[in-house]
Image 1: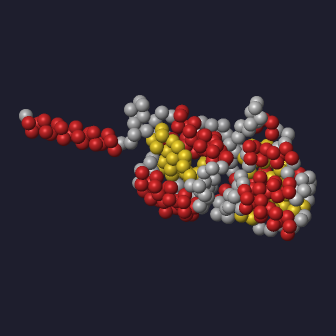
Image 2: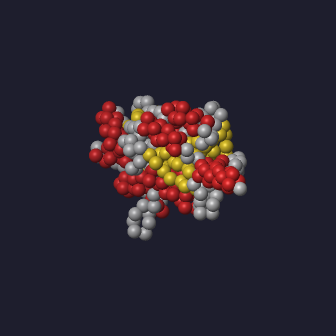
Image 3: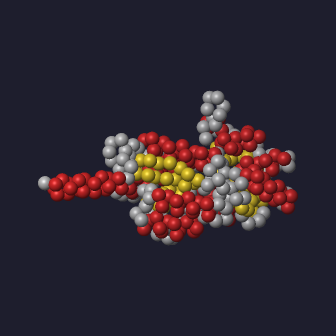
Length: 345
């Protein structure tokens, strides 16, 4: 009898250990999936918005523990370190908005070898991930922004593309789309020089815009890819007294560029809602963790991603595309303001 009790206690102990290793339980007793978004850097409005989306997804899914982390600078090495920490922690899914996709490949391979789902956003050329999630086709988005800018320029003049980082695939895809559209549709446009890198730094964007304007006083428009470009460039345009002659365009948020839209230093901004993109990426990861299939027509549960398309990139990674770009100018800026005058985004 004593041996029997010892055996039963041993079995019970093993069962308890197995339960402790199966992941944190939700209130309903099911496994709680840990989904973590690693952004390019913390402390800027764009990634404040992605946190809103991740938090919303977490709140709506009791069997999920979803949250966001990021470094204090847009340093690829710092981002890789955060991903490696999450791998060591044994989370269920790692979502990354990469600063440098190539630098993440070894970590991604390691994560996937351990059964961790890896998804990216703003990284349509990424290799060694389960999926990449894009708000739209990047080349088409670049072409669209170029058309808006070219119409303001009346099809003539010198413009200049900026990127946050020369290693950022998304920024460079947008510029590729802009350049291709200019060549195909707007022969009267020319660029001042090759794309300018401002390292996701508004002050550096401002300084480089001033340098550009001193060297090329005929520049009529500057197109930003990072959210820091438009306000940096618009500040330079304002200080040089060039409003009405030169303007900033590109990806930015109303809360960052609103004053410059009002003044005319910026003519148009374009974006997708970062919170929705974060939510959609978390939703895709959740479906994978639940064993569900993601295919053309899948609904990721948020506006702009209700009927996605999918194409494999050159590395064989399936890229999910939504239809989620937004245009804001002085005429519709009020739609992005709350009753108290603050910005919705």
